[in-house]
Length: 619
Figure: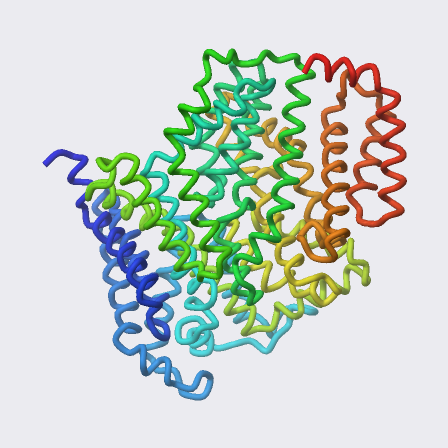
């Protein structure tokens, strides 16, 4: 048996496939009762992880074997006695010594698992919260609480739905996984390459076409993968060299890919895993979330797209000759089934199907259309590989959700969530804009060290309630938190997506990060827009919604002109300042600000009429 087949049928691969099959079964027959669904899900995830990370030295192998055995014992206890655990009276029935030992071991295993799969930041934060649970009586000011005991902490985290096996992990074990698996089947069908070719045929011949291609493909693939960094590496390996070839600066090219990949997490219909958790927190259908998120995502990508186009015009970059690009008809013939698969998933989500069923039917649709297109691709080997990839791809999300459960459990146990919410309101002195800025900063700081999903979960429990208490629409508040958790990937000084793009672009990660920040500047303003004007979330009267979207689009375009400093020619400092003023006036909801902004814009365009006419003629 060759090495490829050996890796396919390794223990970790078989466990990953079994995890995917278990999830498909529960999608079809319904979730398991009580704690069983998240427990079985996490058991598989832990087992897959500790069989993947076998270790190289003897000590590492022994250590992983011990972790594997401990996982079987700890999770096996809940599986065997889940009925007794469900039927016990929380905080009244005493916690046994066995449960304290196993629960403590569960927390340690999860912290180690999180370290292996998503890095040190998440477990470090969880350890700080655990320490806070015990040190409450000695904490100053609003951090003070009565403290807790080890049995009380273990009960909260291990034996109830308020800790590890809480909402976040339940969503991971139901909705999130099936869409990760959907993305895996779509990837296995060759969707990425096919869609890339289709986009090349559509946008490649425009000036700045490679950058526009990067934006479109990253938006498409990012909404499926849910990982901005993975998206940067995947699509960037093609788009960044192409952008450099036509004349874009290497750091600018890397920044375009980083920004576009980050935006994939906020692009409907799938978005990131946090969006599914948001729907559960708010008690809203997932279709409501994606409908509300559509216009903000459109503003994000239009802002980036307009900037890269202006950059191409400013540098007078050449177009890619049409003869070097694939023909649209030929590309469409090759990729129509991919588009049909995505259209099907949108249909199922918006037609009232549960997200689990929509994901399941989406996978079935992929298999059917691929079979019609090329039946040779639908074979046991490809299906097995898709199941394996899906099982392994879900590990990091499940780890983030389970570890976040530790933090959320302690937030509820100590009451720090309500205190933090009150602190935000207090520091803001009742000014909503101050509260929004504070929330945005904390989301970005958390997002710099945590996966987007984990950062959102924590802030949804702490910061979002404060915004709601200040009168912000709950959906707008949660989307605000979610957006800024995503934007950490392109915010200096960390900007992880910039570091992922730097080796491909052969550029400077710091410069790429700052380029990405300015390219994505619209994304930092859009969340404030839908807090103050929920019209762009499609909330309100039709005329208000249409006007709000129209002025927001013009405002975003003006913001792009401001950042690039060019419109038919270089802008003077005063002109840039006026375009910035215009963009802010048009972005802010309100008839008066719209009228003033439109008036300034007319004057600016009249002043630059000759340059704009020359630009239009050249285009």
